[in-house]
Image: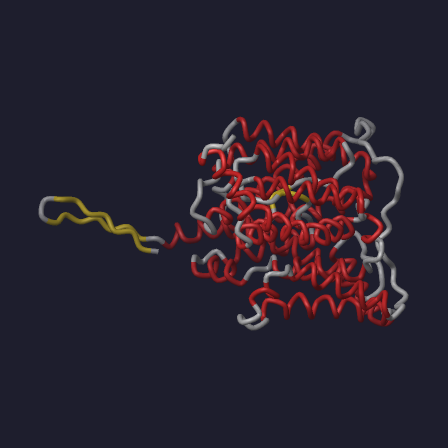
Length: 422
């Protein structure tokens, strides 16, 4: 029996394009998922769980077929602030509630409205989060432990330099050098350049640390049962509502921005943002219920997916399946990875969140003060506080422009003309 050509065509596309892309993204997802969980102070297994849920579940039903979902850097700072207050299991419950809120927002079709927020505020929020991540993980690269607040981390840096550990620093520097240098390889090394830089950096750091017998802290994946969520009712409602809204909003904004950016990289069907937002919510409900990190769309993995040739959502789903298989069969290999290598990886990701193109854009549109206000607010006060400060700055800028504007009306050839300057 011969299958019709129409039946075979989708299968050919999967094996020709999506299979290879899924393997590339899988190789990026393992170190990224572990590193983000480490940066937030969450159980490392929670990052793997979120990658599996984001790949298989969100990838199957999402509105952005080529977007890769999982633990993303934007929520790292938020989760890091929740764990000391609520503990991990209540944080999982907050993730579930945030997911339910995202589902409601998606069903209410407000995704486009969420993107109506000034780009200066959105990019300032992500840049501020990136700075907080980078400062915190720099402590780990130096061989220490980060504090819960960015200001404390800055204050403790001199003492951390005085007590730095050479083994961790050497592994961290090696990881950073590979991450920075890998994209600069000559074009003639095309096949080698296609290997993901994060994989090369972490694998090389692990190999060097193991071969030379360098004594550094390494990944520890506990074999205990999943840390299932518990009721948050013993905590104050105001704090819980703020936590749920923060996780939902930051995750939604990061996912939607990534989906829009992903659309610019391919010629296929445009993303259904409301469906994508609801799918992210479903992913968070499931991830939180089984002890996973909050799920969000990520630009780094999504870009890698498209550049590796992904054509359908099959690549997204298969990448989640590979993560699941790896965690189940080869989890012991992960425990050889130095924590300093993962910290260096996330530190570089944090630095890259301060995007020069975004800064030029907001400066060109005279919104730089709102951008700076948002960044400083996020770094020194918190995510929601930073966004509120950015909105306030944007309103002040608009009022100042309005006060300096001049309006002139005149009649020409029987038609009224209006000129606005300022």
